[in-house]
Image (tube, rainbow, N blue to C red):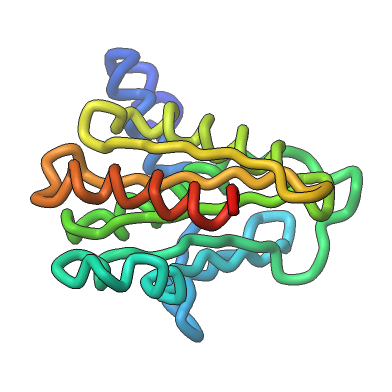
Length: 181
């Protein structure tokens, strides 16, 4: 019996779980980033930087848990590249691994300098809703216009984080200070 025959014997919710597990690309930690290569030969890099911690310097009891997430394709995707659901599944798995430390706080910023900021922001929102973790994680959004640039900033952290209220207040305060001066 092959895998597709086995899957047909499972209830629908289990099929989704198995296909999700099978849909992820293998990734590894290389040069301070998670990297994976798709079946089409594109290599992605997903990284978590600590540089944003300086924005929360006065919050010394939780600032060291703040990481700014980013991802990129190494090289360029051709204009006619096809959407690859496995890329989404892999990045969601990496984010899930990131949150295995429950105190971690994820910060994600999209700007429109290349006219793709709003698209990346919508994609990131879709990933959040697809993850099925809305009940577990708080997601805060802030968008602003700066000259001719639109900026979208998101922060995600566990709903039961010991500093949940303070993190939320600090996020909006920092965004207002940076973008509305």
